[in-house]
Picture 1: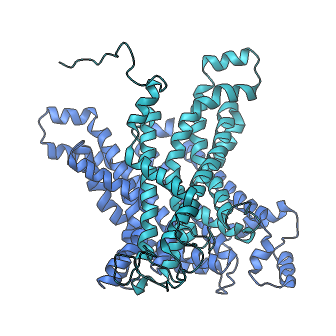
Picture 2: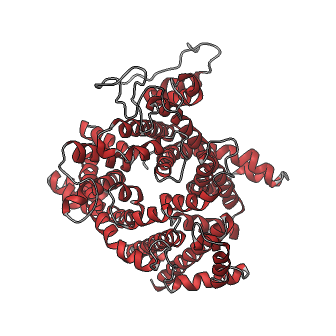
Picture 3: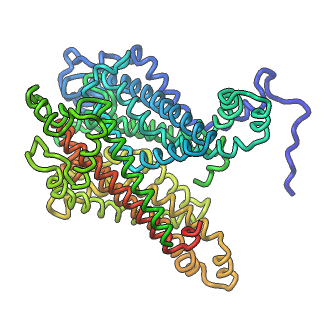
Length: 311
Length: 305
């Protein structure tokens, strides 16, 4: 017979950690979180970690030097050098910076637009709702990669105007992804708001005469944040892959800024010559980070949103 | 039924109309269409001439009207790279994309459906875990990286397959695997959830109670019914595959629509880029419409709701 676990009369955890938080920490998927933490760490400290300047040839290194474990490799450039004699390891480390920047800001930007439109559609209903949802449907009719290519190609002329403080091309990509990936947020959040606005506490707030802006901020937004987080964590992987795709096509991050996508595109020119490490290493970086992001997203979905468990 | 079809047709028309508006406005908000039409290195006189010729100096509503008129006539302008109408270029490339998408779809079905059935029938076994890992990898490893890896292994090292081009059946092997890879994962997920739902239904339970052998229950009672959503997804995926193989067609020098789009971007050949994007939208709106109508024919509950 199964014995039901009864809570102890006192919590065995340290006083300063609430039991619930401790439980969540224990359950976090270890490997994906470590990979993501490593990505953040590398992106932040690329300047300290990288042995060489990622945009300049290594002095005395030569071009197409193989990694250290192959004949002719050296510890000075552990992952070899590329067609310009630049250190591949340093370029990979700096590439993490672009990936993180685009993944976080692109996802958040899209999430911001989507949340705003979703709440407006769901809360106000009527023709506003109809208009926003028709727009969302139409937006979804274009495959996201084709749409991204189209927008990026149009914005290409303005690459130097949209830099802000970012490397060339990164501002564009963030804008493009913001304009493309809001649709899913808008749809799902609208659905949530449709039921939320019928709740008693929202009705009560309306009767009490709270302004609509205040009701939305105090009573609607906090209740859709969980869903928002789940959607965001599931979008990150797609954003990273499509950033690499755009950079690969020359529409994303511009050379000489190192990004995993444009490293792959440079490697393609000499693919037939046998310098496989130039292709394999950035490809592995992209795949591992996306895999970690997807696993983490899956875990969040199960954790925060029981309704989505069977999707 | 008739009202349903009419309503659904109406929605599709609205979608197409909004699509044309979105593209029309995005182009005008991000830059000067006359300069885009003339192409890179165009002289200011040419820009002015094009502006008058295409009516780009007139007010926006008038411009939009002629934009729509040209689109409905199938006129997407002329490519300045090839000096050919975009329509002819597109028609020339489309068969290659259809070939590639057909092969990619077959691969995604051959991997996705059996794997999906296995995970659904053998929930929480080693098979289930293996298939789940395959699905996760399919969604995480970009198809173009799979393509590049295959080139390194099968073309550069083993020299079994040609690295690029088209013409023989061998040429299509690697691009279709790279393309089908990602879609196999989504096919697997859908087959799994669809099978699980059907296996839980009353008629499957009844069949088991009657003593029908498990194999027949799965093959005849469950799989046939689980197939409907899977086939729908296959239809939609096919159209998506025709349009999104941009990078894979570029890597393998496959002369399809995706490659055309890439060339259009490289040469700043704006009419080509615009044409490919608009036609992608039209195709997807159309296939969504067809799927909905087909569903209404199969399932009467839909047309009366």
